Length: 147
Image 1 (cartoon, rainbow, N blue to C red):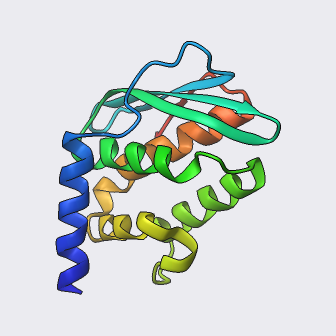
Image 2: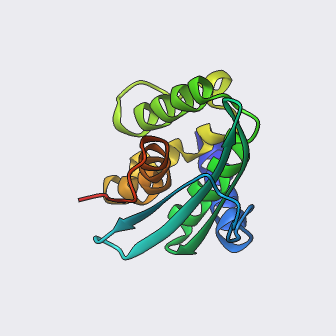
């Protein structure tokens, strides 16, 4: 368990400081803004979705290390996936942070490291913000909040 906690801290710090796919995307087919009023995290998620596949994904905004790391990992995880695969990943990720069951590394891959957020219930909304924003973008909603 201590190894997982160490990995959690390392991944959050690394992705928080050096987020992947942190950029504006002019050619986005979908986008949504997510806001967490509790801690001030705000991000815009850009998605280029063609032929039932996520061709590209990026984000911009500001937030805590957990929020930024989660968004960064999200972008890595969904590129090249179909809508059904993305929706399954969203459900699995949200379930990991809100259910009592242990994370399934085979199903979640590197995202399982964020299961450590469950130890800090007040931070769950930070970790799920980008995922809720992804849901909103896929659903055609311009903005979503965690409240």
